[in-house]
Length: 454
Ligand SMILES: O=C(O)Cc1cc(O)ccc1O
Ligand SMILES: [Fe+2]
Image (tube, rainbow, N blue to C red):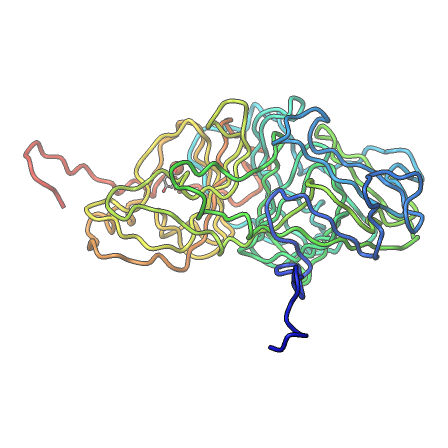
């Protein structure tokens, strides 16, 4: 390199690593992004007039006075303010999307339950109208608890837009991709990825594969965040750099559109004369994000014994009681098992937390049969469960050599609150009547004499 071409002083990166694919890396960062140059005001949030004739609008995800660590808000610079709608709100029915408290006397919530995948139908359903609630827990009115849903969608939302004032939505696709247009930009999502759509943010969903099915965890409480890693240290599990927030993108059209709001369990629609996704630029730390579950660096035993599944927590939605989550989002990904003289699948247990599980793909080690991709299981507060007979027989005889669990991705929505079944889950979804029989073959081996029994 000769003297002239040698870098002098600071050298700027030719491109920003990670920003190339329409996303910005990081968890909970303060982001700045503009679809038109110079749209974000310099040095202030709300100048007297905004460039391009845009309106400034703040979206608050935490109370104004929250402690710094939990303070969340974004500033949007938009073509019209959100308050501009053509009509008043009108109540609409969304009969399959249920909200806690939702306890139906004749729906018995007690039992270990498992469902086959909820089948697709010919009925025209969008991501929103195709939401089928399976369980609810807590109370939306006090902003505690959650609901679990399956979505079945075969119709794009074109002039239909949606937001939830009740909750943030954790979306776990299982079959088919989603294209999620949000006020903050576009998220392309496929199975083995997840995304989180914040409370109050408007979006619509289209279906590149024509149809899609997946799971949603609706969080009424404090936002999902990364779990504390404790003695694990600063690395592994879900690393912050693997979370991706979209760059600004806007839709400019002046056609009749509808915005539907979920508010305290009810649904209300208003007509507007334009796309509400007209945010040209934004900055702040309250925004949607996606995450590829394959980037999760699992930690596990490399000596003996089976750790608690909290070791696989991707995101946690805390409550005021330390270590007692409103929701833990836990995954069971491909990984090595190397624990010697150990019963390697999950142990038999009862848990104060309520466990709803879904299978995204492959085989779950505790249930080699019957818990298939798209399937769901529910092991509620203090209901005993554990490996089925097949898994027990295999696990008590397998060699201690390291083995790689492949062809597997299941997850758990684990909540401190008991989960109540909806009528859909009890009567319409494909509930497996014979699920509890999977433990029938667990015979008594005890015969009063010492020694290990086969
Ligand atoms: O019940 C389940 O299958 C989930 C689970 C997995 C595990 O490894 C330990 C405990 C637990 O609840
Ligand atoms: Fe469990």
